[in-house]
Image 1 (cartoon, rainbow, N blue to C red):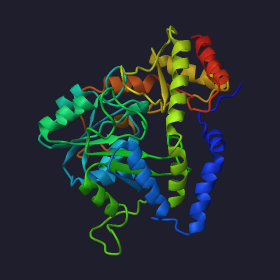
Image 2: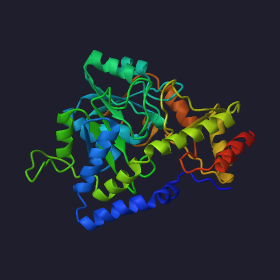
Image 3: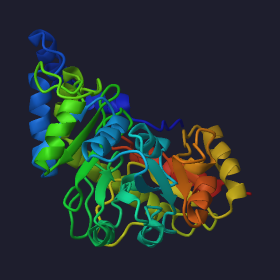
Image 4: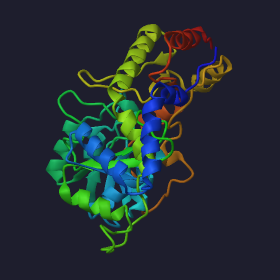
Length: 371
């Protein structure tokens, strides 16, 4: 049996008529950039997220960097994030001209560790970017408390956790702005690149709207800006898919529960940890081998069995060649948990369109692996 990592084509065929109708509407309109379909999707997405404003941009990296610029942060300002996420989170900080300060994750969920954040704050710290990693919310109450104590901005990187929530908070409720990516492999993905910023702050909304469009609100250019707009054809795809995100999330959670039940007791791996009361949306179903030396052999075994398992964030940000040692980046405290996770992580296939037979085949294959 072959089990693919992505279900993009299956998902498309499941709602093909809806997506095709939306795309045809855009093509017939002749308005492909900053047109009515983008405005429609922004309205729908703001309502879905419970925020007052949503701004479609070119990609998730731009969503972060434009938000940083919109907040008025500048060279020398420090922004704290963690080391075991996708490189783009830190990259966006550098694009905006600020300094990325990397701290550790916790040892269970692998989300940012508030204790590490607290220890890293200096008078130059201006913001915190927690990442809702693998589809689970970071501990936002703790992050918000630190931000209030030190008068810091909070930008949530929610590229992996559309439809997630905490035990007593919604994404966006405890931050200045939220950013997300709509690249195809996300839980809500278009057929290419895309991203968004959503917020209750009218000033951030107005500034990001100008920044994404060359600094212009109409024809007058009020400042410098960027060419970072979510095209209407992508908005059409996302508008169709948004109506189904809840049912797709529920299916992901069902498959995750099946993985949990089938893999509990396998002594060579550690299963994902879900915080009590949180809605984990399983962008990734991430296991870790107890011994880092077992990761590549197990991964290779699964691939040989036809299972397209992968690794995500298998090189921590500070261990990558592109990490800019010097004034633009700094490590504060131990990054032991991040490095351990990077060395031992394996992502198993998880998407709504999997079948029970496929999930059980993955479970049986993991269990049958011998050192």
